[in-house]
Image (spheres, rainbow, N blue to C red):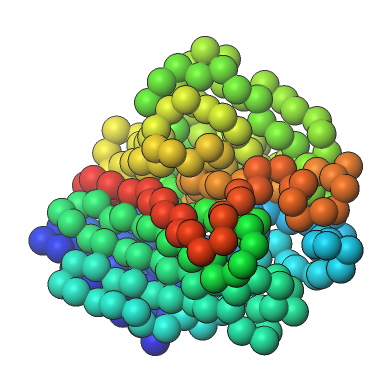
Length: 288
């Protein structure tokens, strides 16, 4: 089922399948969100839970038992139920089931919360641990934005600007896991010219940057993602020069090929004590 939320400047549509954003349109009808195309990538804005990224061999272990799970977890392929809707807010809920416990042996409630106010969309996460033990998890967003957004502009005309000058390396990924190799990406700079070449080696994965936001712009329409509190950030597009770019706030990143395979040792994994709740949100501000 598709739900809609509207402000005076934006309208969004969200599917109960994966709690995934399907559209972000401005008041002038312009579509900011990538609409999916199998030639490049058929996703739009998948929700990443209970892992971010891939696992070596698509497997992990917990307390000596091996489980299989696909990249980015199962939430993006799961049917959510409506938990709450108001004029400007939508809450969708996924709870553990016999099927999820085959992949992830924990009892949980996972909420994805959308709010639309003015020209800003908030995407929030609430994870409730219903177990008598600590629950390991990761969570993140994966929104893709059409690029170019302005008539007469090319992909390479766009820049990604960070709040602060950063010095950071990118982690290199191959075969759904990190190789351990890094390459310089930001060297005391706050702005990078967007390039398809970045993605010939998969996602640009940045850990521990100090900025709280990043903005995609070529001087006209812009998308700013505010991700204060999120320790990890990814930038991605497909290897075959897709006309979009993903700006992705994460709690956690891919596994390394050298990882032990134990979920509790996965790089960036979060630990939620028994009976407690985790909450986080990022915002997307769209300007014409």
